[in-house]
Image 1: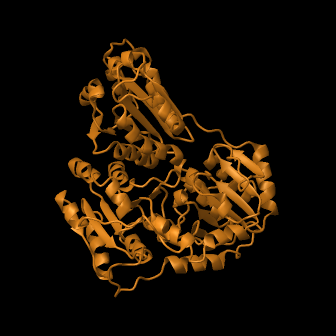
Image 2: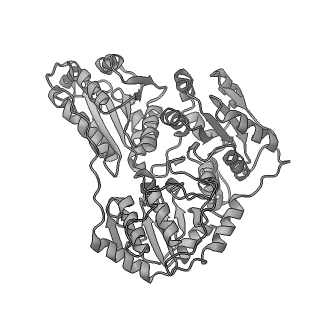
Image 3: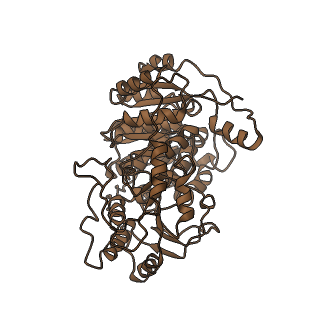
Amino acid sequence: MNAADLLVSGLEREGVEHVFGVPGEEMEDLLFSLRDSEVTFVPTRHEQGAAFMADVHGRLTGDAGVCLSTLGPGATNLLTGVADAHLDKSPLVAITAQAALDRLHRESHQTIDVVDAFGPVTKWNTQLSDPDVVHESVRKAFKVAEYEKPGATHLELPEDVAAEETDARPLPSRDRVRIAGPDAEALGRVIDHLEEADRPIVVVGNGAVRTGASDYLRAFVRGTGIPVVSTYMGKGAVSDADHRSLMTLDSGAGGEATEAIAQADLLLAVGFDIAEHDPAEWGHDAPVIHVDSEPAEVSEAYDPVAEVIADIGRTLAALTEWVQGGSGPASDATGGEDSGSDGDSRSEGDSGESPTSFDAEWYVDLRKRIVSDVDREPDPDAEAPFDLRDAIPVMRSAMASEDVLVSDVGSHKMAIAQNFPTYEPNTCIISNGFASMGIAVPGGLAASLATESNVVAATGDGGFLMNAAEMETATRLGCGFTIVVFNDEDYGLISSKQRDHRGEAVGTRLTNPDFVAFAESFGIDGYRPETASDLEDALDDAIGDGMALVEVPVTSAPP
């Protein structure tokens, strides 16, 4: 086989089903190899969209998503989505074509040093300059991308190398390397701090969701009664219906979630990555314990007194065993939902006494204020444009607990993070490491391929038009998901920050096409509700019923 065939055979061995990308002439051999394989090449409308699709696939499944581009401008277009996967810790393998080796030593048409450009946003990347190393490089790309903490890797295939013959054969895929369990000394330091604490709090990050540690975390929270606040990317690790959940950082009209961190006398950070949220904003002076698969980043605002660098779930199971008096592993440490007797994951869960000596009441009023703010009832007589925060509960009520929301970046992201209760892990996908606009529509496509649940892609008018062309890709694939466009004709989050700083905003106003007509031009059902009742009906009709777009006019502050 030639090198392109060998690369594609490696993708087959890794279980890859889709490769997202934009074709180019330098990848001709690779495209024909894909055509003759079990892997489906999905032509997208922009390389950034392709990378976002691979990014969200990796985030939802834990298996590396794969994206593909040609050299030069194709590769640089791909770069933003690759960087998003890198900082969001999502497994992704990027493949780029390159010119023939005999013209890389000089200035040449469309040629830049792509390997060098991808270096800062990948865990590992290389040029495949020899067809006999392709099989090893593919296996390494997936192993490194998927190993905790996951991220992006990159392979560059020059067009002449792609056509060269090789006797090598693809390496078999292997089980991922398992992270070790916690050592007794590190656990002992954590337990010493917990025994001294009166008002501890858990700050849960992306790592708890990503590593599948949610069940262990829920068992630990049940066993201790310690309250939990999540980062934007940790939503759903503990159900927001649990009475110990203080929802998300910044939740509550007065920032009660962050206030809880300031009041706590011990912070147990579980799977927290400093790229998710700046700890300098927490206003705490309590000691921090870091439980993660890698040591904490060095930061004056986040300087742990103890770190347990081990498998997160096994660490939490060991701590739960300690809570139960060393009587053995917690019986429900690998169990399911924090549910009531009816099994509804939105239930408030049990209300039993904590077996520990922690103060079980210190956060109760904070929880009540958060719930009161998040559960506010929209005015049934409201007319468009709507208050953004009034529209979020309507969207929540139209979605089941297991449905997946993919949020773009903007003012709506902040509202979703703070006011969209989440009941299951990996059902609210927010990019808050790199936080790139334009992820929602391609991300919704990837989610619809990766899950059986209904999918909603929530976006602002600014982020929507950055990758709206991927609606054509979605309809071509027969995908079914709902796009909710919050339209204020403004880069609203930037406007808000400018007004906070200077009392006015500049350079943020937009004009938009008719979004309903735009959706219909793709053969997609379009809705533009004018009343609160229309909004509820539109979301109920759209979600779970094929491709649809709901334009939600929302209020915008004056320019």
